[in-house]
Image (cartoon, rainbow, N blue to C red; front, side):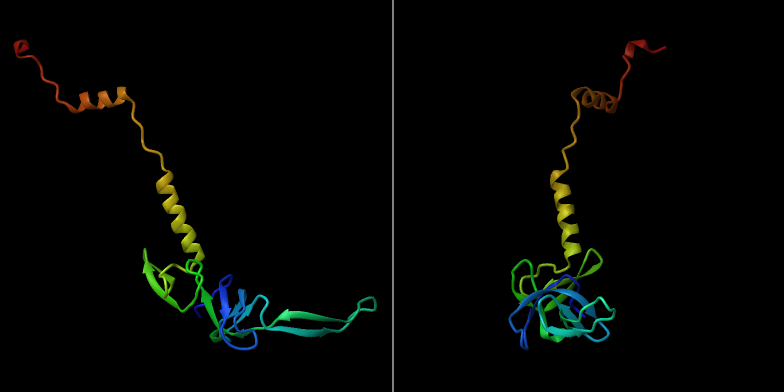
Length: 147
């Protein structure tokens, strides 16, 4: 299944066609997902104790994963999911713009790029620089001091 929890998806068929929502839960064995605000059903709850009241509860029911498409964060379009290997890890990518759909991987890449930019330049003092230069140059003894 190419849809994961917390993905933004667009419903492409059925009563809720065109509605977007976040994936709350996935059922990979049944190939179904629960999307926030989509496929709302009413359930009747019976009072179980003397002081409880019966009520009608609304909740989201699962829909088939083939009825949804993942929405890319970068381009904002519903897209099919492709796969690419980046740094030895298989990553989900948008087929339209090529951006990564795995939020954890995107966050890791951004943090690495920010760390490289923010890394301060290594400063060296003039004294230590001169000391390194003199240590690197071979010392020669004057020729008159030979015994």
